[in-house]
Image (cartoon, rainbow, N blue to C red; front, side, top):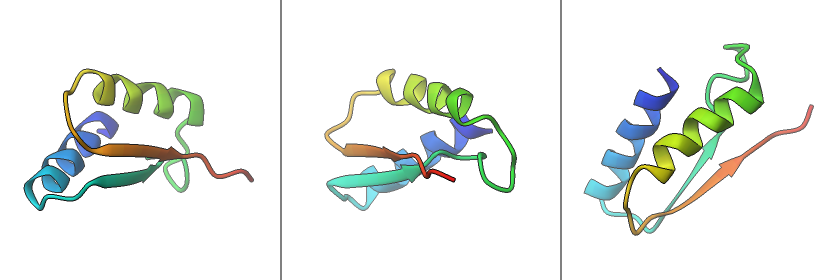
Length: 62
């Protein structure tokens, strides 16, 4: 689910187009998913894709 969300968001951002996109670590809040695991999944999607977008992952402390 996390991977699919990242892919859809990237598709949407590239279609607009925008120059940059920031993501919180998806699924780690109310979803309760482990932050390190979420980051790993998101980075796998981002590294597998060629794009001119600048993408920032945001990790909130708490």
